[in-house]
Length: 392
Image 1: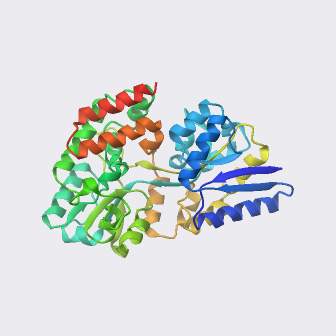
Image 2: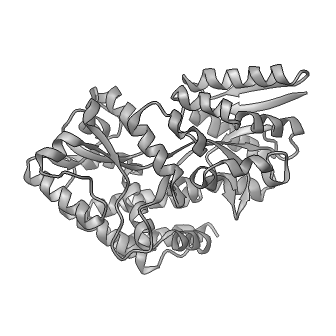
Protein backbone atom coordinates (compact mmCIF):
# COMPACT_ATOMS: atom_id res chain seq x y z
CA UNK A 1 0.00 0.00 0.00
CA UNK A 2 1.29 3.45 -0.98
CA UNK A 3 0.06 6.69 0.59
CA UNK A 4 0.58 9.67 -1.71
CA UNK A 5 1.60 12.74 0.33
CA UNK A 6 1.95 16.10 -1.40
CA UNK A 7 3.35 19.00 0.61
CA UNK A 8 5.10 22.37 0.35
CA UNK A 9 7.85 21.66 2.87
CA UNK A 10 10.77 22.22 0.52
CA UNK A 11 12.96 24.26 2.90
CA UNK A 12 14.79 23.23 6.05
CA UNK A 13 14.07 22.31 8.75
CA UNK A 14 10.59 21.32 7.54
CA UNK A 15 11.90 19.20 4.67
CA UNK A 16 13.98 16.95 6.93
CA UNK A 17 11.29 16.67 9.59
CA UNK A 18 8.71 15.60 7.01
CA UNK A 19 11.09 13.04 5.50
CA UNK A 20 11.79 11.59 8.94
CA UNK A 21 8.07 11.36 9.68
CA UNK A 22 7.55 9.32 6.52
CA UNK A 23 10.47 7.01 7.30
CA UNK A 24 9.40 6.45 10.91
CA UNK A 25 5.81 5.74 9.86
CA UNK A 26 6.99 3.21 7.29
CA UNK A 27 9.18 1.54 9.91
CA UNK A 28 6.19 1.17 12.23
CA UNK A 29 3.86 0.02 9.46
CA UNK A 30 5.51 -2.70 7.37
CA UNK A 31 4.03 -2.93 3.91
CA UNK A 32 3.05 0.76 3.81
CA UNK A 33 5.03 3.22 1.67
CA UNK A 34 4.68 7.00 1.94
CA UNK A 35 5.38 8.54 -1.46
CA UNK A 36 6.36 12.20 -1.05
CA UNK A 37 5.82 14.88 -3.67
CA UNK A 38 7.25 18.20 -2.45
CA UNK A 39 6.71 21.45 -4.34
CA UNK A 40 7.24 25.16 -3.80
CA UNK A 41 4.07 27.10 -2.91
CA UNK A 42 3.15 28.57 -6.28
CA UNK A 43 3.93 25.38 -8.21
CA UNK A 44 1.85 23.43 -5.69
CA UNK A 45 -1.11 25.81 -6.02
CA UNK A 46 -0.98 25.58 -9.81
CA UNK A 47 -0.81 21.78 -9.81
CA UNK A 48 -3.57 21.42 -7.21
CA UNK A 49 -5.83 23.75 -9.19
CA UNK A 50 -5.50 21.43 -12.17
CA UNK A 51 -6.03 18.31 -10.07
CA UNK A 52 -9.06 19.80 -8.36
CA UNK A 53 -10.57 20.58 -11.75
CA UNK A 54 -9.96 16.99 -12.84
CA UNK A 55 -11.49 15.59 -9.66
CA UNK A 56 -8.39 13.57 -8.77
CA UNK A 57 -6.46 14.73 -5.70
CA UNK A 58 -3.68 13.02 -3.68
CA UNK A 59 -4.39 10.92 -0.60
CA UNK A 60 -2.92 13.64 1.66
CA UNK A 61 -2.06 17.17 0.56
CA UNK A 62 -1.16 20.57 2.00
CA UNK A 63 -3.98 23.01 2.59
CA UNK A 64 -4.36 26.45 4.11
CA UNK A 65 -8.07 25.93 4.67
CA UNK A 66 -10.53 28.68 3.85
CA UNK A 67 -12.01 29.33 0.43
CA UNK A 68 -10.04 26.77 -1.57
CA UNK A 69 -10.71 23.95 0.89
CA UNK A 70 -14.37 24.94 0.94
CA UNK A 71 -14.55 24.61 -2.83
CA UNK A 72 -12.90 21.19 -2.64
CA UNK A 73 -15.38 20.10 0.02
CA UNK A 74 -18.33 21.27 -2.08
CA UNK A 75 -16.94 19.25 -4.98
CA UNK A 76 -16.72 16.14 -2.77
CA UNK A 77 -12.95 15.88 -3.18
CA UNK A 78 -11.95 15.85 0.50
CA UNK A 79 -12.89 13.69 3.48
CA UNK A 80 -14.83 14.68 6.58
CA UNK A 81 -12.19 13.69 9.12
CA UNK A 82 -14.71 13.33 11.93
CA UNK A 83 -15.92 10.23 10.13
CA UNK A 84 -12.48 8.62 9.96
CA UNK A 85 -9.83 7.22 12.29
CA UNK A 86 -8.65 10.83 12.81
CA UNK A 87 -11.78 11.75 14.77
CA UNK A 88 -10.29 11.40 18.27
CA UNK A 89 -7.13 13.27 17.28
CA UNK A 90 -9.15 16.37 16.36
CA UNK A 91 -9.77 17.08 20.06
CA UNK A 92 -6.04 17.51 20.71
CA UNK A 93 -5.71 20.67 18.60
CA UNK A 94 -6.29 24.20 19.84
CA UNK A 95 -9.30 26.15 18.58
CA UNK A 96 -7.07 28.55 16.67
CA UNK A 97 -5.14 25.77 14.96
CA UNK A 98 -8.12 23.70 13.81
CA UNK A 99 -10.64 26.38 12.84
CA UNK A 100 -9.27 27.23 9.35
CA UNK A 101 -9.95 23.65 8.26
CA UNK A 102 -13.53 23.49 9.50
CA UNK A 103 -16.11 24.22 6.82
CA UNK A 104 -19.57 24.81 8.32
CA UNK A 105 -18.35 23.02 11.43
CA UNK A 106 -17.04 20.00 9.54
CA UNK A 107 -13.28 19.27 9.82
CA UNK A 108 -11.74 18.65 6.40
CA UNK A 109 -8.13 19.03 7.48
CA UNK A 110 -5.71 18.86 10.37
CA UNK A 111 -3.22 21.61 11.30
CA UNK A 112 0.53 21.06 11.34
CA UNK A 113 1.47 24.59 12.33
CA UNK A 114 -0.34 27.83 13.10
CA UNK A 115 0.56 31.47 13.38
CA UNK A 116 -0.97 34.85 13.99
CA UNK A 117 -0.50 38.43 12.95
CA UNK A 118 0.46 40.93 15.62
CA UNK A 119 2.67 43.94 16.19
CA UNK A 120 6.43 43.41 16.22
CA UNK A 121 8.01 46.38 17.94
CA UNK A 122 11.32 47.93 18.91
CA UNK A 123 11.52 48.12 22.71
CA UNK A 124 14.33 50.68 22.64
CA UNK A 125 12.42 53.07 20.36
CA UNK A 126 9.34 52.69 22.56
CA UNK A 127 11.41 53.57 25.63
CA UNK A 128 12.91 56.60 23.87
CA UNK A 129 9.36 57.80 23.18
CA UNK A 130 8.33 57.30 26.79
CA UNK A 131 6.13 54.29 26.07
CA UNK A 132 6.72 51.80 28.86
CA UNK A 133 4.17 49.13 27.95
CA UNK A 134 2.67 48.00 24.63
CA UNK A 135 -0.84 49.37 24.07
CA UNK A 136 -3.83 47.12 24.73
CA UNK A 137 -6.58 49.41 23.39
CA UNK A 138 -6.93 51.23 20.08
CA UNK A 139 -6.89 54.65 21.76
CA UNK A 140 -3.67 53.70 23.55
CA UNK A 141 -2.27 52.52 20.22
CA UNK A 142 -3.00 55.86 18.53
CA UNK A 143 -1.42 57.63 21.52
CA UNK A 144 1.67 55.43 21.11
CA UNK A 145 1.86 56.37 17.43
CA UNK A 146 1.77 60.07 18.31
CA UNK A 147 4.43 59.70 21.02
CA UNK A 148 6.72 57.87 18.60
CA UNK A 149 6.26 60.61 16.01
CA UNK A 150 6.97 63.29 18.60
CA UNK A 151 10.22 61.50 19.50
CA UNK A 152 11.36 61.62 15.86
CA UNK A 153 10.69 57.93 15.16
CA UNK A 154 8.65 56.53 12.27
CA UNK A 155 5.93 54.60 14.11
CA UNK A 156 4.97 52.03 11.47
CA UNK A 157 6.44 50.37 8.41
CA UNK A 158 4.08 49.15 5.68
CA UNK A 159 4.58 47.48 2.32
CA UNK A 160 1.85 49.43 0.55
CA UNK A 161 2.82 48.22 -2.90
CA UNK A 162 2.10 44.59 -2.05
CA UNK A 163 -1.36 45.36 -0.57
CA UNK A 164 -1.74 42.19 1.50
CA UNK A 165 0.09 43.65 4.54
CA UNK A 166 -2.38 46.54 4.60
CA UNK A 167 -5.39 44.25 4.69
CA UNK A 168 -4.25 43.04 8.11
CA UNK A 169 -5.21 46.39 9.64
CA UNK A 170 -8.73 46.51 8.23
CA UNK A 171 -9.31 42.82 8.98
CA UNK A 172 -8.28 43.13 12.61
CA UNK A 173 -10.34 46.29 13.06
CA UNK A 174 -13.34 44.52 11.51
CA UNK A 175 -12.85 41.70 14.03
CA UNK A 176 -12.48 44.06 16.96
CA UNK A 177 -15.36 46.39 16.01
CA UNK A 178 -17.94 44.25 14.18
CA UNK A 179 -16.96 40.93 15.77
CA UNK A 180 -16.15 37.48 14.43
CA UNK A 181 -19.79 36.39 14.17
CA UNK A 182 -20.64 39.43 12.05
CA UNK A 183 -17.63 38.79 9.83
CA UNK A 184 -18.65 35.15 9.37
CA UNK A 185 -22.23 36.14 8.58
CA UNK A 186 -21.01 38.63 5.99
CA UNK A 187 -18.81 36.05 4.32
CA UNK A 188 -21.83 33.75 3.99
CA UNK A 189 -24.33 36.40 2.85
CA UNK A 190 -21.94 38.45 0.74
CA UNK A 191 -23.19 41.60 2.46
CA UNK A 192 -20.52 43.71 4.18
CA UNK A 193 -22.84 46.60 4.89
CA UNK A 194 -22.79 46.22 8.68
CA UNK A 195 -21.90 49.57 10.32
CA UNK A 196 -19.05 47.81 12.13
CA UNK A 197 -17.19 47.31 8.86
CA UNK A 198 -17.58 50.96 7.96
CA UNK A 199 -16.33 51.91 11.42
CA UNK A 200 -13.31 49.66 10.90
CA UNK A 201 -12.49 51.68 7.81
CA UNK A 202 -13.05 54.94 9.66
CA UNK A 203 -10.64 53.92 12.40
CA UNK A 204 -8.04 52.87 9.84
CA UNK A 205 -8.49 56.20 8.08
CA UNK A 206 -7.93 57.93 11.43
CA UNK A 207 -4.64 56.07 11.74
CA UNK A 208 -3.59 56.90 8.18
CA UNK A 209 -4.32 60.58 8.76
CA UNK A 210 -1.68 60.58 11.50
CA UNK A 211 0.85 59.80 8.73
CA UNK A 212 2.40 56.98 10.77
CA UNK A 213 4.07 55.08 7.94
CA UNK A 214 7.54 55.46 6.45
CA UNK A 215 8.08 57.84 3.55
CA UNK A 216 7.12 56.22 0.26
CA UNK A 217 5.19 53.39 1.90
CA UNK A 218 2.70 53.18 -0.97
CA UNK A 219 5.51 52.02 -3.26
CA UNK A 220 7.29 49.83 -0.73
CA UNK A 221 7.71 46.07 -0.93
CA UNK A 222 7.73 43.75 2.06
CA UNK A 223 10.99 41.79 1.99
CA UNK A 224 13.36 43.93 -0.08
CA UNK A 225 16.33 45.83 1.44
CA UNK A 226 14.26 49.04 1.36
CA UNK A 227 10.98 47.40 2.35
CA UNK A 228 8.75 47.02 5.37
CA UNK A 229 10.67 44.29 7.18
CA UNK A 230 14.01 46.04 6.67
CA UNK A 231 12.66 49.29 8.11
CA UNK A 232 11.90 47.55 11.41
CA UNK A 233 14.85 45.16 11.28
CA UNK A 234 17.19 48.09 10.69
CA UNK A 235 15.79 50.20 13.52
CA UNK A 236 14.27 52.82 11.20
CA UNK A 237 10.64 52.19 12.18
CA UNK A 238 9.20 51.17 15.52
CA UNK A 239 6.53 48.65 14.51
CA UNK A 240 5.09 46.44 11.82
CA UNK A 241 1.86 44.45 11.80
CA UNK A 242 2.96 41.08 10.51
CA UNK A 243 2.83 37.32 10.99
CA UNK A 244 5.11 35.08 13.01
CA UNK A 245 7.69 34.98 10.19
CA UNK A 246 8.49 38.68 10.73
CA UNK A 247 11.63 38.30 12.91
CA UNK A 248 13.38 36.06 10.38
CA UNK A 249 12.58 38.39 7.47
CA UNK A 250 13.83 41.34 9.51
CA UNK A 251 17.12 39.51 10.05
CA UNK A 252 17.38 38.47 6.40
CA UNK A 253 16.79 41.97 5.07
CA UNK A 254 18.48 44.23 7.63
CA UNK A 255 20.21 42.19 10.31
CA UNK A 256 17.44 42.45 12.90
CA UNK A 257 17.36 44.26 16.24
CA UNK A 258 18.06 41.32 18.55
CA UNK A 259 16.78 41.56 22.10
CA UNK A 260 15.08 44.89 21.37
CA UNK A 261 12.38 43.05 19.41
CA UNK A 262 9.07 42.38 21.13
CA UNK A 263 5.56 41.26 20.23
CA UNK A 264 2.07 42.33 21.27
CA UNK A 265 -1.41 41.41 19.99
CA UNK A 266 -3.61 43.78 18.01
CA UNK A 267 -5.34 46.07 20.54
CA UNK A 268 -8.97 45.89 21.57
CA UNK A 269 -11.36 48.57 20.35
CA UNK A 270 -13.36 50.13 23.14
CA UNK A 271 -17.05 49.38 22.70
CA UNK A 272 -16.41 46.84 19.96
CA UNK A 273 -17.87 43.34 19.79
CA UNK A 274 -14.49 41.64 19.49
CA UNK A 275 -11.84 40.74 22.04
CA UNK A 276 -8.07 41.11 22.21
CA UNK A 277 -7.92 37.32 22.70
CA UNK A 278 -9.26 36.68 19.19
CA UNK A 279 -6.47 36.04 16.72
CA UNK A 280 -6.06 36.64 13.01
CA UNK A 281 -3.65 34.48 11.05
CA UNK A 282 -3.22 31.17 9.34
CA UNK A 283 -1.04 28.14 9.09
CA UNK A 284 -0.36 24.95 7.22
CA UNK A 285 -2.40 21.81 7.37
CA UNK A 286 -3.23 18.61 5.55
CA UNK A 287 -6.44 17.45 3.92
CA UNK A 288 -7.28 13.87 3.01
CA UNK A 289 -8.65 13.16 -0.41
CA UNK A 290 -12.00 11.44 -0.80
CA UNK A 291 -11.50 7.72 -1.13
CA UNK A 292 -8.06 7.74 0.49
CA UNK A 293 -7.12 4.43 2.16
CA UNK A 294 -7.32 3.98 5.95
CA UNK A 295 -3.52 4.14 6.06
CA UNK A 296 -3.77 7.83 5.13
CA UNK A 297 -5.76 8.48 8.31
CA UNK A 298 -3.20 6.43 10.25
CA UNK A 299 -0.45 8.69 8.92
CA UNK A 300 -2.32 11.86 9.90
CA UNK A 301 -2.73 10.45 13.39
CA UNK A 302 0.96 9.57 13.54
CA UNK A 303 2.25 13.03 12.63
CA UNK A 304 -0.18 14.55 15.14
CA UNK A 305 1.20 12.63 18.10
CA UNK A 306 2.97 14.77 20.69
CA UNK A 307 6.30 13.05 19.99
CA UNK A 308 6.24 13.84 16.26
CA UNK A 309 4.76 17.31 16.57
CA UNK A 310 7.12 18.09 19.45
CA UNK A 311 10.11 17.43 17.18
CA UNK A 312 8.57 19.76 14.57
CA UNK A 313 8.30 22.53 17.16
CA UNK A 314 11.71 21.96 18.75
CA UNK A 315 13.40 22.10 15.35
CA UNK A 316 11.85 25.51 14.72
CA UNK A 317 9.81 24.21 11.78
CA UNK A 318 6.64 25.93 12.99
CA UNK A 319 4.52 26.94 15.95
CA UNK A 320 2.55 24.35 17.94
CA UNK A 321 -1.01 23.31 17.19
CA UNK A 322 -1.54 21.71 20.60
CA UNK A 323 -1.06 23.15 24.08
CA UNK A 324 1.23 20.30 25.18
CA UNK A 325 4.04 21.49 22.91
CA UNK A 326 3.96 25.26 23.59
CA UNK A 327 6.82 25.01 26.10
CA UNK A 328 9.01 23.42 23.42
CA UNK A 329 9.14 26.63 21.35
CA UNK A 330 12.81 27.67 21.46
CA UNK A 331 12.46 31.45 20.95
CA UNK A 332 10.86 33.73 23.56
CA UNK A 333 9.05 35.95 21.05
CA UNK A 334 7.77 32.90 19.21
CA UNK A 335 6.67 31.46 22.55
CA UNK A 336 4.65 34.64 23.18
CA UNK A 337 2.89 34.10 19.86
CA UNK A 338 2.33 30.41 20.66
CA UNK A 339 0.87 31.23 24.08
CA UNK A 340 -1.48 33.81 22.57
CA UNK A 341 -2.66 31.24 20.05
CA UNK A 342 -3.10 28.53 22.67
CA UNK A 343 -5.26 30.88 24.73
CA UNK A 344 -7.17 32.37 21.77
CA UNK A 345 -10.93 32.47 22.23
CA UNK A 346 -11.52 32.84 18.50
CA UNK A 347 -9.60 32.70 15.24
CA UNK A 348 -10.02 34.27 11.81
CA UNK A 349 -8.12 33.05 8.78
CA UNK A 350 -6.51 35.73 6.57
CA UNK A 351 -9.37 37.21 4.58
CA UNK A 352 -7.54 36.78 1.28
CA UNK A 353 -7.48 33.04 2.03
CA UNK A 354 -10.76 32.68 3.92
CA UNK A 355 -12.77 34.22 1.08
CA UNK A 356 -12.92 33.11 -2.56
CA UNK A 357 -9.85 34.46 -4.41
CA UNK A 358 -11.70 37.30 -6.17
CA UNK A 359 -13.22 38.54 -2.90
CA UNK A 360 -9.93 38.29 -1.04
CA UNK A 361 -8.21 40.30 -3.76
CA UNK A 362 -10.92 42.94 -3.56
CA UNK A 363 -10.32 43.30 0.19
CA UNK A 364 -6.62 43.87 -0.48
CA UNK A 365 -7.28 46.33 -3.31
CA UNK A 366 -9.94 48.34 -1.48
CA UNK A 367 -7.94 48.63 1.74
CA UNK A 368 -4.94 49.81 -0.30
CA UNK A 369 -7.14 52.51 -1.83
CA UNK A 370 -8.34 53.55 1.63
CA UNK A 371 -4.75 53.85 2.88
CA UNK A 372 -3.88 55.88 -0.21
CA UNK A 373 -6.75 58.25 0.51
CA UNK A 374 -8.63 57.53 -2.72
CA UNK A 375 -11.48 55.45 -1.25
CA UNK A 376 -13.82 56.10 1.66
CA UNK A 377 -14.68 53.53 4.35
CA UNK A 378 -18.12 53.17 2.76
CA UNK A 379 -16.63 52.57 -0.68
CA UNK A 380 -14.44 49.81 0.76
CA UNK A 381 -17.41 47.86 2.10
CA UNK A 382 -19.44 48.49 -1.05
CA UNK A 383 -16.67 47.13 -3.29
CA UNK A 384 -16.17 44.03 -1.14
CA UNK A 385 -19.93 43.42 -1.14
CA UNK A 386 -20.08 43.66 -4.93
CA UNK A 387 -17.22 41.19 -5.29
CA UNK A 388 -18.78 38.77 -2.79
CA UNK A 389 -22.21 38.87 -4.40
CA UNK A 390 -20.71 38.38 -7.86
CA UNK A 391 -19.34 35.08 -6.55
CA UNK A 392 -22.89 34.01 -5.81
